[in-house]
Image (cartoon, rainbow, N blue to C red; front, side, top):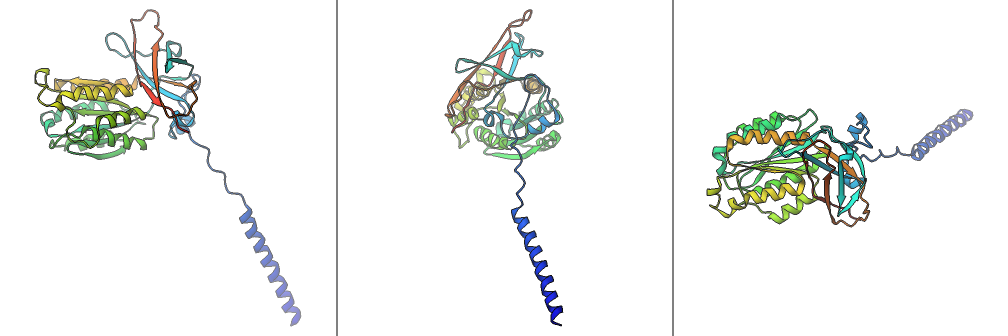
Length: 339
């Protein structure tokens, strides 16, 4: 009996020792290494994008994380037609008047993240139907990898449709839009910029459709101008204004065109002033086409200081032989990373 007890005790001890060793092995087993950081890659030295690059491009902002500045550039001729087919050697880029070396160059139709900021204030009543048609024309230029959101504003802005790959969802919501209240245009742009932080595509744009200046926002014009300068977002605006003879009725209406123009120019976008609402669909389609016919220029700044200061960017065209004078449009600058 005692021999049996000793044998049982010995077996128990061996099993306990094996279990403890296994537990120790589990504790000593190294954890899986963290996944590598994701960065945006558009194109290196003219190399075509690969599928794995497209996946990487959904990560962090390349301009900040790898110290590579990306500048979208549109080029037009004297008739305001978009010019495609230019090559790297047709561009020169400067930062604070110092010429930079172009490290990346692309001209393909890259996926977009777009926010529609739609005015539903009381004065938009007779213009809503044409404004809806303008949005529909803009969405016709979309591709399968784009994403969109909708913000409507009157007394205050509201995120009506968050990011979706389906533009029909936004068009369906616009169908039931009613005009009422005042105009919180600046607050609408602020909310759009905040929503754009969730974008998955490296190229971002906001389209504003509004009929005048701001008269109901909490944010000031200077605050929003600083905000759009800091963001890597192009802003396009369609301003629906009364004829010039009637434009001086209020201070807000008088300042509306200048406000939208200043905001758009800061970002490399454009402002289109429309007096005839029948022109709205064509203008919106033109904006969509422009976003599809841009060049993307990347460079590593010679000024490597991480001082958080604003850097002014200038793009010049090396005029191709046989073409009329060409005019580039681009984002005017960016803020350097901070320490």
